[in-house]
Image (cartoon, rainbow over all chains, first blue to last red; front, side, top):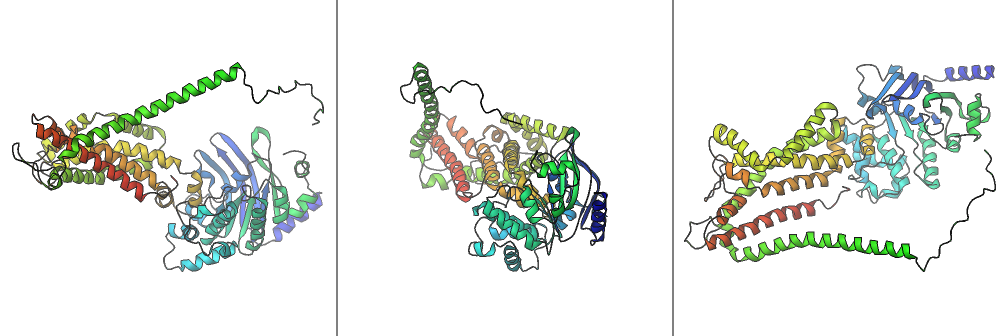
Length: 272
Length: 299
């Protein structure tokens, strides 16, 4: 077992420079600590899944990766998150610039209700003042094609984004996140509000997106993690309900021969 | 954890679906009485309102003719004349009051809903609440002491507009703040996650999403200010002639109603009712217009 772990560590080390790396990452909501000392290395152009039972801090960990955690009142972070070896929590780093490079898709589809489908896709460009001089029509078509939504909505681009079905709305939100051309995409349980068909479409989409983007997905669905991800991180809340990273490795290995007893218990459905 | 297959428990009572017992009859009776009471309350409430409206129309309609809308008031004894200066004065003062109060009111609302926390925000809320409860005559006295006696030096439309703006700010602030709080935080997060700065998120996503409610807040405060009489008596004073100079006394519908109503002349009483009808129409049109413009929108 020790041997496997070592080879695995070597395998991780031989990969290209990590896209994102956390060092001793801890996060709090007010006085309550949500995660403790998370060291996680996320490789570029791979899909990394974060799994674990409810309340294990997996969403919190994800939100720390693009400084969305601190948006919540009273939230606090300690430790480092390195994007291209640059700490995104270093003093002087503007969270707005971080989020510009690391996009996010949320659990519940949240298209802007007063904007049309077209305006939703280019909302990021317009609101960051980067739409000038861009061929917005091309941006809209490209990104809607990327999320396989173009054919479904090309004749009603002026309709409200809220008029779409849940699955379409979520793909619209992914297109909106991609339109600002981030390097990485964080997905916080993107399918938990969707039916199986819509879920399948999003999973298919992720596979196609990883050529261009680094993807981190939080999911409570273990089948989904094993279907779509290259690497899996298992979180569990221990004492005092503080979430910790229990095990991290290639998805195939983690689901077939987990090293930690707690991982095995979780993936075999003994708890959680 | 094994679940025991058999648990000793009472059989569920299978009450018959029809043939209600005495408790059901009692519940139905209470239900009927309660429904009747709230329906009566609704009828009474809207009935009083309709009664007022109907009476104003009945009393005011005889005063209405073209001259009433286009001419200035004439001294007693002369036939005809209208309240055009008062209509224009009210509209002009409301416009100036809106120019002053909309940035203040919406700005304060944004501060309270999006940023405000801690002692300072609590203080701001307290002040806004006190301001909302301030009798309008006190606002009038204050503006009289400050603007009429000192800064401007005489009764003026500007002083009237300032008094109206002071009345509008707290109403607008509280309505708009409540509306902004209704905008789901998921939309703010969605914009922030695109790398949109906070101020652009508020101006580009939060305010447009809440625009119907924001406009409603502005109109509510306009309607309230449009009917204020006491502060205008001490600031704008009223004027029997056309005047668009904000630094001179200005006519206003509520003041005109007051002047006509306290007079001893029968003809002027009719004109007071006519002016009241026009005031109701002006404010009613304002509400209807905004409703038509803002039909769409989630809030």
